[in-house]
Image (cartoon, rainbow, N blue to C red; front, side, top):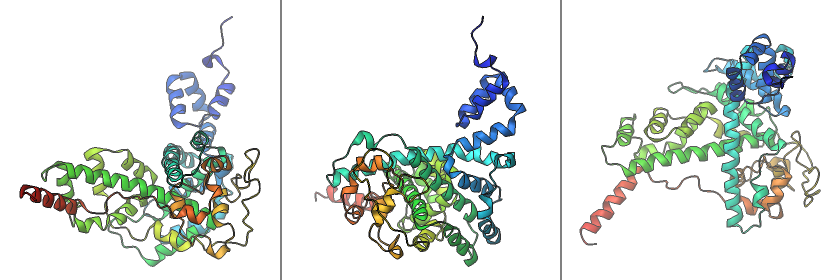
Length: 418
């Protein structure tokens, strides 16, 4: 009797195997490797793609995943009237993800965006936890590094995925192409979208925004360092000079770099990932070709709306504070996060989101569960003291033009024996 293999299983069992795959790349690899599985897929296409699309995400955020898929169907740029109508239908959209109603037009964008969000979720963990470790060193906090840098917990994955989904929805609905004037109605709709969420949910999106700004500053500074190392006729310096209306490396352009980053963010996660993964001249050209002024994007909308949806809720994070076993207050995906409870404990709701939280957002205080928080050691400290430690997103605020002038003065002084 021959030994059973995947190929000899019944079609029903093979379909069950494919139904539980949560990776698009693994799914495609299986279809390419096995003609038998491919035949099963052809006869159950929508059923299997539906499960593949949703398996990429935490089951508790399917409403947001569905909303992202529906938003992705609207051609960009989205007129303010259309984005307003979409926002008005958000409550109804939440009811639309029953699997029997899923179509290929819905599944396709989810299968496309899923791997990108997965990439950002993992990159976010490494980036933010590195800063949390730096915080521990700076403040001389005793930390359990093994637990601090452990893989995501289920609730943590759900929170981070949810925030990236909502960020991407915002980008799709409110992206403004270069040269298009932003009118007031457009900006009102952007703020209105954020008002669909509670204050702590808006703060989750703000954490993602701060992370992306930090990562993009790293890209900008890498480009500047490359320009400093080359001569005036180097390829990267020529790219900068070709930018309009001013040289990308000039002092006047440096002042606009925050707005350039806003524009790159507004293009959404797939483009941001392309920028982060590009290197050398290719990466520099990609950034410079999309260095446009973008003032009214998510940063301003978040700063306006962060505290608008606060409600009278008793914030208590102390129950079970030192208990490393069992459930912990704030570890439920549908509840306020432990970080939010800790940061706002004792504050009146009207103050939520008003006080400086940048130092907390840097290391993702909104997302971590009790296991990681206990390992970090920050729960024993006052939030105000922790928030005062602001991580420097930018190594040098001077432009390449200014730094080259300084180097020339130093060289001139050395040549004159100074």
